[in-house]
Structures are given as C-alpha cells and as structure tokens.
Length: 375
Image (tube, rainbow, N blue to C red; front, side, top):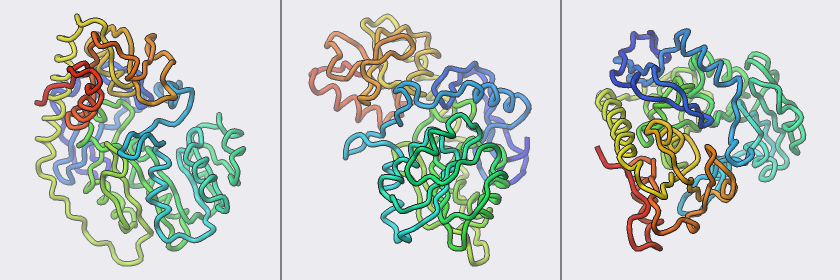
C-alpha cells in the first residue's frame, strides 16, 4: 500500500495481525489488522484498504466518546492534578500573543468539550464546531459564543477562521495531506492550526487502535504540516502525557525541509509490538490472583482485560467522574477503596506505570499495584 504521507510503498510489520485490537472509544476489536512503515519518510500507519475502511465505518456507526463517565471529558493526570485535556491544550495556546477577538473552529468537536472550555476562557471569541455526524448539533449550538455548527465533510465548512483546532482528529484521517490543505484554505492570513495527536513512542497501546490510520512522531507530524503549507511555531511532547502537539501557522516563506532522522523506527515498532505481547502474557499469568483489579477504564485497560482473558473483580480509576460507575460489568473503585489483599494490574507504558504504582502502593507498604515487565 502507498504511504499516506509521501505515497512511497510501505512495508508491513510482522506480528501485528496476531494481536487483538481496541477502538478509540475503548471497545475491544478482533485481531487481524495491518500495520506498516514507510521506508522513505518513516511514517507508521495502517494500510487504508477496503477492510480498514469497512471496520472504521462499523466502529463509527456506534461510537460513544467518554461513555465511561457519562460524556465527561477524560482527565489527564499531571503534577498539577487532574485536568481535562482541553484545558491543558488551552493553557499553552492562550499563553501566546493572540488577538482579543478570534474566530475559532473546532474540527471533530464531538460533545463540545473544547468549545465549552474556550467559551469560559475567551467569551469574546466567535466559536464554530464541525463534526461528521449531526447528532450533537443542538448541544453544540447551545454553548455560549458558538455561531454555527457544520456537519459532514470539511468541504461543507464555510467562512474563514483565525484558529482551527484538531484535537485527536488527524490520526483518524486516511488522506491527511489533502485534508490539511483543505483546512489551510479556511484560515485567514496569519491563521493558526492547533493539533493534538497520540504519541505511540510514549504509548505502545496506540498502535492497537483499530480506527487510527496514522501513528505520529514529532518528525512525521512536523513533516506533514510542512508539506501542507504550515510553519511550526511550537510543538513536541509533554503538554499532555502520551500525546504530541503542534501549533503551526500558514507559511509565508518557501517550504524548508524537515529533518527526519528516524532510521530506527522499524526497530522501535517491533519492540513495541513485542512488549504488548509480553504484557498480555504477563497478565495471563496473573489471572488466578483474587481479588483482581485493573487500573484504568480506557483503551489500555480494555485491551489487556480482553486480550489476556481476564475476569477482574473491579477496575480502579483516579478520575472521580468514573468512580462509582461500572465498566465492563465491574465496579470502578477509587484507589483508596482497594483492599490490601488485592492485586491490581497497571496496563500503562513502563515509565508511567512505575510512577503510578509507586505512588499508589505507598499507603499499603507493599506491591498491590503491579506493573508489566520491561521488555
């Protein structure tokens, strides 16, 4: 299959089709997918063949974003405590010198979490939402400052904007170059694009998401934006754990090449696939433990539970919006409600998992929260 970024022929990753997958709204999905790497631009991607397109269509037909918390936006846990992803993105964006009055478009606005945050923090801005579906039109239009809601393909969007947001959208787009070039035409001179995508290098579980066709690194994201007429203002990782961000403006000068320097991508992906298989096998060995719990109520927790055939007694989540509810038919507990005789598996990338387990094990004085072994 041709690379989604540069059209060069891609090479498939062995071992990936054997792994069970998960959807971006945290539902388990059968094994049998494909993963590929472009040997020219080193972009990691899913071949967008007829099978991928049908699966994506099936996933989106019953998509339920943040169903674990009744629609409340997922919290990101940082040193400053738990905060919604939208707030973290705006913290950084709004620190830039921006006009008092802007027209801001949120593409893929979902339930309107980002628009609501913008409405609170910039009440003088003119806000616009866009999404594939029309189900939340009235909900979006009810947000203070929202002027219009566009549904369907981005070709239906009219007007010009000062800022366009793409928060966890670009990884779903099978034609990212054409998509971004269309968005560039919707920006006013000097307009800005704000992008947030998953970072597979920090979170191998992202590779398992069946409806993500692009898996970005900093160079591949910057190369794509540069190719589509944007200059990078700032960006990288660290704004939100396990995610990449980029703020880019319409380029005025000639395109300058972006250094790639990613010849080790194939080895990194192979290592990530091997670690996922190892984490699954580790969890299978933990099945007899009781009471058994799983930390988290999202993609990684769902995948490990089903891929390892676990029957946990409970889940654990630090997000107060999810505590007291049920997930996969089991209660969701706060960490403080976990009994000391329990075993709780922490399906997170090694470094993050170790930090979480170390913090949550302190009240017990023993390892109740267990982390997957390093490869």
